Image 1 (spheres, rainbow, N blue to C red):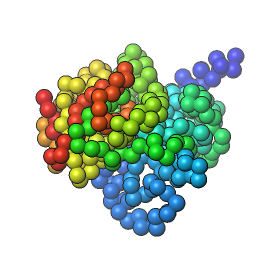
Image 2 (cartoon, rainbow, N blue to C red):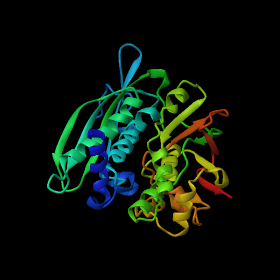
Image 3 (tube, rainbow, N blue to C red):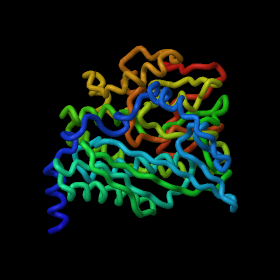
Image 4 (cartoon, rainbow, N blue to C red):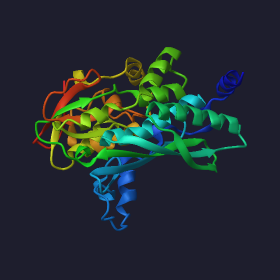
Length: 339
C-alpha cells in the first residue's frame, strides 16, 4: 500500500511546473563562471594535490597510505517532473565527478531545497528515495545532509570517494595523439528541454531516463589503465566546452562528426529548434577556437548534458562496449569538427 501511495503522489505533481530551469542546463555559463571565479583569491591548501587552481571535476587530498580522498558536490533544479526520477538523475550526476577522477564512492550527503507551501514534504521523500536507489547501486548510502526552505525545489549530493593516488585521472593531462572517446550519446539537454516544452514522447523519456541514471562507473576500470591520459564528464558546458577544458591553451582536437553518438529524439528536437537557452552560451564560449561549427550539429555539440557520459583521452585504442571513438588530440590549437 505504501508503494502504491508513493507512486500516486509522485505522479500527482510535475516538478517542472515549480522551477524555471533544470538539471545542468540551469548552471552558470562558462563565461559567467569564469568571471565569478576570477575574484576568488583564497589561499591554496598545501594539503591538496588537486584544488581550486586546477579547476578539475573534484578536489583531491592525498592520504598517508598511498590513497587519495576525492570530494565533489553537485545540485540543481528539477530536470524531470517525476520526483523519484529527479532524485535518481541528481545522484548519478553528482557521483559522476568521482568516477571521472577514477575514485570509488564511499559516502554521500544530501542537499535539499523545498517549497513546503507548494509541494508536500512527502514528495521530497520521493526525491530522496530515488537518490538512495542510485547510491545503493554505487555501493554507498546517503548518510546525512542539510535541507532548507526555498522558492523552487532543488536537490543534489556532496560525495566522497577513494582512489589509489597513482590512478587519479585529471582532465588536463591529455597528450598529442591521444584518441578521444565518449561513453554516452549526446542530446540529454535537448531532451530535457523537450520534456519541459511537452514535446517528448513517453518512449523517448524512457530513453532519456536510461542514460541519465546510468552510473559512469566505467571510469574506475579506465583509471587502472596507464594508457588513459585524462578523463572528465560531459555536463553543463556540452561536449565542446568540456573538451576545451581538457585541451587548455596547449592542444587542439579533430572531431569526426559522423562518429559522435547523438540520441535520435534529440536530433529531432534540434531540427525543430527546441533547445536549452544555455546552448547559446556554450556556443559563444567555444566558437572563437572551433571550426566547422556552422550547422545544426552545433545544437548537440554544445548541448548541456545532465548526467552525461565520460570524455576519455587514451594513448592507445580502447576496447570497451560503451566507448565510442570520436576524434584525436592534435598539436595544432583549436577544435576542428570534420564532416
